[in-house]
Image: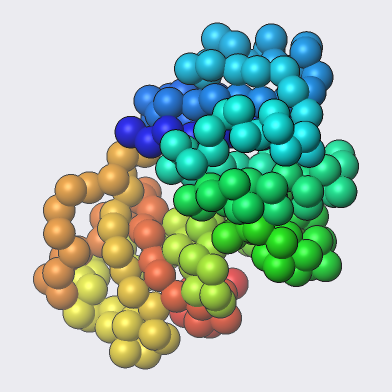
Length: 216
């Protein structure tokens, strides 16, 4: 369990608060809008109304005591930038900030943010890859050009073993897990593992290699 400071409670920040609550983390949520703060009160450990660009206000929060400080402000980049800068100056251990464009990410990384997330860009990429194919059912980017894909097992693969398919050698794609009836099989994937019908597999590789392997 981590102690997290969440600043900015718009739609993005609210979703973060909900998920952190599910994960049982301690969360202090902050926004200058009272209605937004009241909306997340049932899902966070504590919440405060305040302006994160006010250095005195941030100092009073004791930012050094948090494992992660998340700046989820999306409607005012200047406020996001100032907040990230103040957090780092006040000794925050780790600052994660939201950006919608590359130029914003550059400024944030130069002025306090340790890492930057692109919720709109990341969701756009996911949507494009997920819904432009009839076979990919889920997709998780890994930061570079690699990703984990959940893909329907092709009919021609059913009943064959990992060794027979040899996709790692032929396409540089790794089969990591099998999902049957909506649940992942706990069976360790080995060269002798046989692929069942009406199931999906998790594979690791680049989009280009996966497209070539599955003829997408």
